[in-house]
Amino acid sequence: MTQHETLFIGGEWIAPSSGQTITVVSASSEEVIGSVPEAQEADVDAAVGAARRAFDDPTGWATWEPSARAVVLERFAGALERRGGEIARLVSAQNGMPVAISTAFEGAFPAVLLRYYAGVIKEAVFEEERPALMGGTTVVRRSPIGVVGAIVPWNFPQSLAAFKYAPALAAGCTLVIKPSPETVLDSVLVAEAAVEAGVPAGVINFVPAGREVGAYLVSHPGVDKISFTGSTAAGRSIGETCGRLLRPVTLELGGKSAAIVLDDADLDLATIGEKLFQATLLNNGQTCFLGTRVLAPRSRYAEVVEVFAALAGSLKVGDALDASTQIGPMASDRQRDRVEGYIAKGKAEGARVVVGGGRPAGQDRGWFVEPTIFADVDNNHTIAQEEIFGPVLSLIPYSDVDDAVRIANDSDFGLGGTVWTRDKERGLGVARRVQTGTIGVNTYLPDPTAPFGGVKASGLGRELGPESIGHYQQIQSIYT
Ligand code: NAD
Image (cartoon, rainbow, N blue to C red; front, side, top):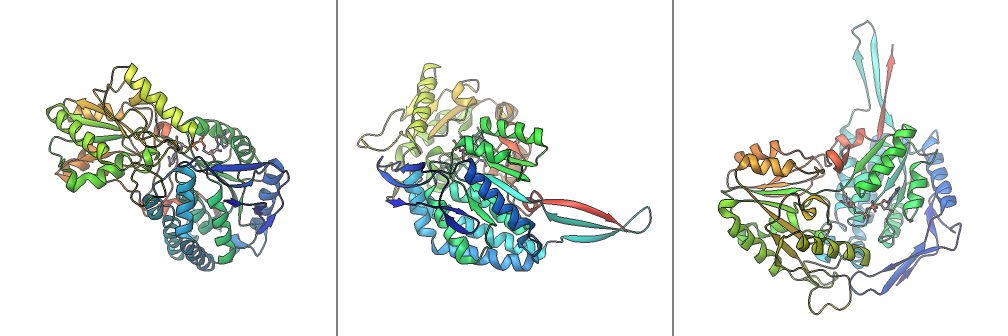
């Protein structure tokens, strides 16, 4: 049980403006595991004020040589690594992510990103002189965009926050980060790591709160840029506000990606099982990029059904903190209700449950749902069109590759996806035809070096890659 009484604002742990708290409950045991103060609008004012002062300081973070910022980012990475195990366990306790997965992602990835962006800014050109066609020269400057409001969901709370703060800090921005109420405890450790690393006061601030306070942050006059990861519904609302304010915004939203199994795919679980799991069921299905629509050629449909039934049936479901668990509970009772609602809808619309469909036996506490495989799904079924965000896959038959591409693109979303084939060139050819921001051939794993994000209702803009620094900069041309 960790009980925090203060908020991290302006480099200090300060008393909150009200006595309201957010209580966090374990997804596996339903027991209370901690609480933090719930930030109110007055706390957001204080956090934005601190970030504003830190940004506007004439000798502050934004004005430092990139190499000096890189040193702090590397120290921050080290401080997070020292807390990696604790962070991973805390994330798992809160949102139900199996601890083996949170150790690999939540406990490790933020440090990888900080080191990566430290390297990027050591090499990056922030100011260049170009010969002008109309005479003279032009100085083109890239300067940090300002105060960033970063709003983060609960499913990968550490990695997705770092997708934002690592490039933003590297660019010279300051941040106000709003974690999701389901996962507020782990952000305390990030604040402690920032202090230990010598991140200057006010450069990074946390306001744990719900959506109303999130909306207040989005429209705050002291904020220069919004970076949001979460649902498409919230993203639309945030995008509308930012459109009205002409405020730059990056939106990483929902997905309903296709895993296209070609007729020459290797379907031996001994060789591809781990990769297939990562691409379709990672983190209890609560991952935005998963290929939750599995498109299978009619010629091998029965075989594909068997393979996914064997994969889902073999997974160890259990307490998220057990190192051998592969599928933990849903993050909240609300989330389990949502997933169960979709399972009921799938059955009602005529899809066939091959494996799962209920609650696992022997789990009388925690918000568990059985890994569930639906066969005979039509792409127009609700379970094939809407994001479920649980361990539920829809197996959809197709006739030929053109039909597979048509079905893959017949979606409001376009975030992830995979193509499974023994012929990499053939896989690349199909991947190029899918309308999506990211896609893998026989694998799917976002990498710091490659831009990540979606098209259509999956979002606007990209995170990761050296390109991401540009989303936290503005460009000025000085004619001389
Ligand atoms: P959510 O949209 O309900 O909440 C996300 C965050 O936004 C939370 O911090 C929440 O408090 C805040 N929020 C909600 N409405 C807001 C508003 N109107 N203004 C300001 N802040 C608001 O999403 P969730 O249920 O926490 O997360 C799951 C969703 O996130 C899924 O749809 C998933 O696909 C998506 N997601 C996308 C990516 C990606 O990179 N594209 C990654 C992970 C999750």
